Image 1: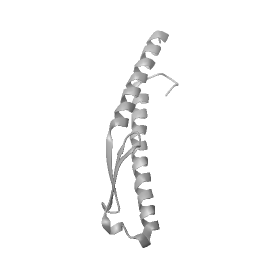
Image 2 (image 1 turned 90 degrees about the horizontal axis):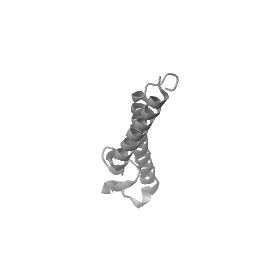
Image 3 (image 1 turned 90 degrees about the vertical axis):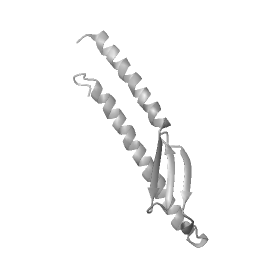
Image 4 (image 1 turned 60 degrees about the horizontal axis):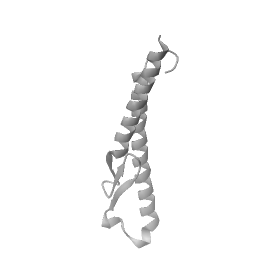
Length: 102
């Protein structure tokens, strides 16, 4: 296998990976928790763009429950984005067939 060809292939893979990562960062994801009572919009770079909470959940005496629900919803959103990022890395790794590397 030609070393120059390997270098070109690696550079191309790096460019594709960077492009996919930028696309992911700019993609908006929508998540719902607790039957839609909490809605979160988050970009692929894990920046939250909005949070909507059903008024029925807003009870000053149940503040801890709301905090817990919100924490679960945000963590679920982050895990979903991490899974999407993993798929991008798997895709990039599969594009390059270097024996012993992947």
